[in-house]
Structures are given as structure tokens and as C-alpha cells.
Image (tube, rainbow, N blue to C red):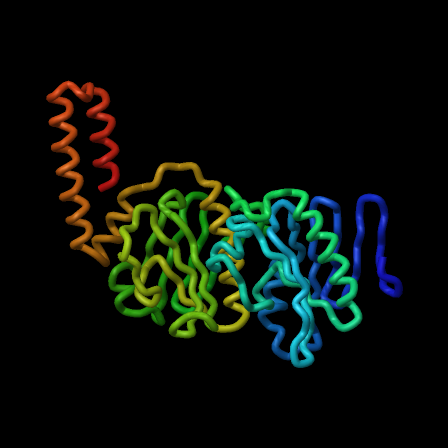
Length: 318
């Protein structure tokens, strides 16, 4: 091991205490235990994110790479872990990558002489990742867990409440009229959510962070700007953006574990509000399918039971 540092080691556990927190190596798992920064005036986002996380447990099989990001212009270096696609809910809701280290739960600052320790860990972890043989394979489910389940997210134009099987949006007087006029309160079944996205203000076109859910079966090109979408909540800048990322990741985890059938009425209502012409198109397509099914039944290709089952599937999607 690297001399001159506070390092605890036995056959099963290796722990290094650094200024940003502790790194614990358990062979098949890495744990980050974070500390708050008290010497950075701009550490609001970092401190909020780490106070929510407390500790992140990262299975080696959830990772695709690890690297040391050397400091630039006198800044701090970082030990950066890269998850496999789909393995980390935080990265998934952020579109696959989290560029800003303060938001990234898999970024661990190392300072000055600690870089040598960081390099040691990076090499050890990289070797362990190679042994899994899974680095380039997308994960079928989240492998890095969100610690705890937040029940509510307060945003700039309202709030989201996470219930057992539903998500409820409630908008306030600061919400755009186009949003409130459609629904001041809007409840979405967990089963009707295809995906969740989080956008930080520094990347958003309008420089306003948001959380947005996307419904199962949404037609291509039917997306709506989060300013007016009742499936989106706008966030205030700063630490609240960390709250939003944490909430979005937890919601994604819940969505991925849900096995219920989607409620077609949710998408139908949303399309009626924003794309009434698409709603009528869906109805027209369904009528054509029903006609085709009736012809197949008349020709003896489908039995009565098969016809009724497929008919129900089509009607349920309306």
C-alpha cells in the first residue's frame, strides 16, 4: 500500500480516509462515504448531493471503467467511475453521463498527495472490472441502488409526490398558464411511465433544470416542452437540482421494478390535451385493426376466443 496515509487493511476490507471522505474496497464492491466540503464557497450542490447519498455502494459488476481525472489550473483531481449502461439510475436519468462532478455520485475528489492513492485504487479496480467480462454489456436493471426513497420533490412551479403506485404533479401559481390550464393536479400510474429524465440547468437550452416523465406508447415526435408539459416539474437553480437528480433516480428505480400493465387511459388523456389529432389517428388505426381481426375470424384464421382477446388488447390501448 501507499505509505504515509491513514489506511486500514485486512484480507477482506481495505479503507482509505481522504479529505473528501472514505473509499472502502470490499473486493466485489466499492463504497464511497462522503464528507461535506467546508472550504469551498461554491460547494452547495456537492454538499446537498452527498448529504442525500451519505454512502454509495457500487458493485464492481456495475462498472465499465475507472480513471483518474487530473486537476487543471490548480483544481482538484478526481477518481471517476463509469457505470455500465443502465446500471446506475443517476446516470440513466441524466442521459448516460453526468459531466459536472458535483452532481456525479461516482466522482470522488482527491487532493494533492492523495493522487497516488487514487491511481492505486484505479488500477486495482480496473483489473477487477476486466475480470467480470461485463464492462461493455448493458445492464438489464439498475445495479447501483438509490439510498432511501424520497416521497416528495419541491420545484419552482410545483411539486411531485411519489406514492406507492402513482406519481402526482401539483402545480402552483408560478407554473405556465398552458400547463395549469390543462391540469393543475395530474396523477400518473407508475406502470404508465416509460422513462424518467433529469436535465441540469447548465445543459438546458433555457438554463432551467427539470424532471420529466415519458409515457409508455408516446408516438415519435410527440414530446412537449417541460415548461408546459404536465409530466414535467421545473427546478430552481442550485442545490434543488441535486434534489431533482436524486428524486428522478429513485423514481426510475421504482419504474424499473414495476411489473403492472400500463394504463392506456393516461396516454390517451395526455394526447388529447397536447396532440388531439394524434389521439384521433390512434382511434382510426384501431378501427382498421378491428376490421382486419373480424375478417380473420370470418375466414376461420382466428378462433372466437383469440378474436376477443386481441380485440380487448386494442381497445385497452385507446
